[in-house]
Image (cartoon, rainbow, N blue to C red; front, side, top):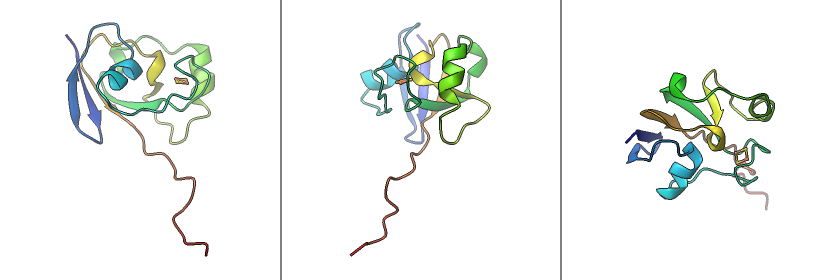
Length: 106
Ligand code: FES
């Protein structure tokens, strides 16, 4: 049974082989945004694979197109809903840019 370590929370979970990274996270109460419901139609489930990238299924053209929209793209960026887990992974969930910068406007 593969293990995924999710960063930055540093939570390691055992997951069934063949599950997507997104489902593995959600099944373990780890929040990854997934605005399109896992249909490769957004980039909110963007994650960076820190270990095990080469064990994942290949990036499709559709995934590549969506990834281009993601903030903070890295060489090992993937969409969590499109990656099937077959081996141990270390997955970083990138910080999202805040919608508001925290400055008091009043
Ligand atoms: S949840 Fe929208 S692309 Fe993964």
